[in-house]
Length: 293
Ligand SMILES: CC(C)(COP(=O)(O)OP(=O)(O)OC[C@H]1O[C@@H](n2cnc3c(N)ncnc32)[C@H](O)[C@@H]1OP(=O)(O)O)[C@@H](O)C(=O)NCCC(=O)NCCSC(=O)C[C@H](O)C(=O)O
Ligand SMILES: [Mg+2]
Image 1 (cartoon, rainbow, N blue to C red):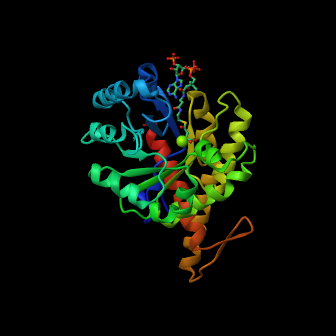
Image 2 (cartoon, helix red, strand yellow):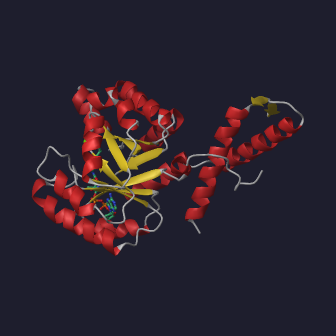
Image 3 (cartoon, helix red, strand yellow):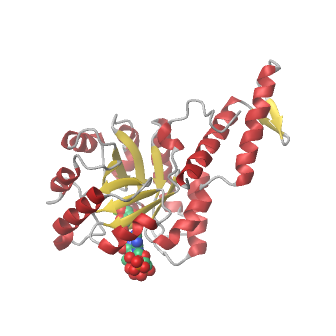
């Protein structure tokens, strides 16, 4: 088994999504700085991080910046304003035909909102902010839209709508997070966890990243460059995990050659489902290494 032999793992999820940094579309300095930052994805924001008076300028500045390029291998996703605002449709029109990897629609409640976006912009993969109670309840139909590529959890809006208080264990948000995650996994799309607002609290960020990783999220959305290192470390496979994945795959292949369907590694059984996870781990590691080339 070599790292290149990755079976039929979905390309979308094999790509690294450890860190997805929001950048206000109005901040030219931050747009420039992002070209040097170690983030796997950039969420160029025209919604909540941009003041109403600034919206048209931010749209123009961002479109120009994307046209100029320079963002390398980072996934480029534009968060537009909703279609129930004065800016949403103009935002979408401004990015049609530009080199972007996705358009992210905020406050998605149902598949009809996704279809409205799909009609407005052909070809580009679509992403949904999952941040309303109705959106969480309709997560499966949203994830199942044929153009849907990924969910971004909006934990601030969700907490607001639920009337939930901030808790380090995120217990009040857990049902919503898991409904979205299950829908994303059922439809093989990407799922990115919400932001951690206290961008100077490294310990709190690490704990929340670990929680999101252990739940199954592909990565964390971030608001400040200082958060990148922790998210990249927590969501990337460790060397021990990579070594174990290789040993599991090798042991399982040896078992198959003997006509058996179960191998044992480190005193634990390895079956075909564990091999699928091991291959995903290697695919992620390979994709992360490729970023450094
Ligand atoms: C939080 C901030 C307002 C802090 O900004 P600032 O005070 O300028 O930070 P620093 O002085 O520490 O910045 C140091 C340098 O880093 C650059 N910088 C800062 N933030 C970013 C960024 N996000 N991306 C790229 N570069 C960034 C500064 O330009 C400085 O650079 P230099 O001068 O060259 O050294 C600010 O970080 C910020 O605005 N963050 C993003 C906020 C945002 O996007 N919010 C909306 C998304 S969150 C959300 O909506 C969640 C969801 O919808 C929900 O419901 O939960
Ligand atoms: Mg929000």
